[in-house]
Length: 279
Image (cartoon, rainbow, N blue to C red; front, side):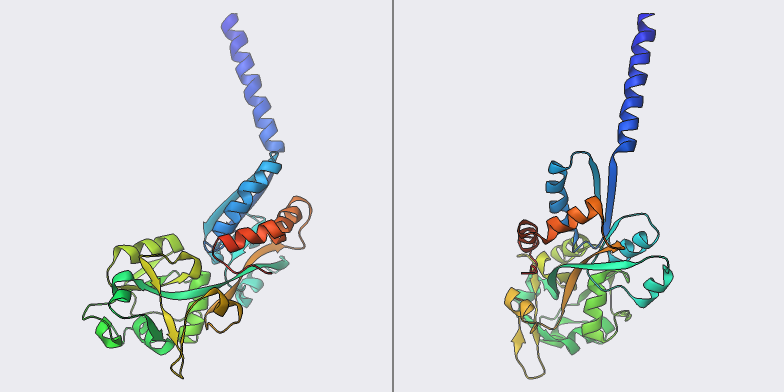
């Protein structure tokens, strides 16, 4: 009899927990791995003041965030590029509302060994020729006699859209010279770090001592670096806005979450993550 009473108590506790979880409000966010570090930190703080909320933040890329929002699987999409007309037409019942949370630059990056060997800036045409496969050795652009490892991103990635638009003139351009096609910023950063001869594309916030950002040589011969000042004044040629996307105007807890991001403290997190805040 005692065992039966214990079993009933366990079952009752399990049912009570299950009901409580079902009643718990849930907000799911997914998309750009560029925006992900900001939202992860915001979510961590937001949970402290909203213990009743089940707040889930995942990556996957801008395209994933937009598509999952369109399919009704999440409440907020993260994007580091604009929504395409095709995506808008694909989800005619959705009212995509764009919320800009900061600004960023997409930087052509190389392995530190290539940077230290003298390749510290390239023209957009030189970068395009590398991705087209016209240049396949670093000596073609004034570097060491070493084969270039060309790292590309998945087609749906926001970073790729912005980079290819600036470099190739087409956000969906093919890259026949690519040796690797990767997804997240973290994956690409790791691949370039592990190579001694790689080139890729990353958000300005993902540069480090092993992954060096290249300056862009203008047609006039001026080198423009991806500094915060040049991102703010738009002199750096590959910049973008960072977005959160909702279906319709945000209400309730979602609106409160967005207000947190737009607040002074929220914008400090944007800046701390390596991006340019709104103010």
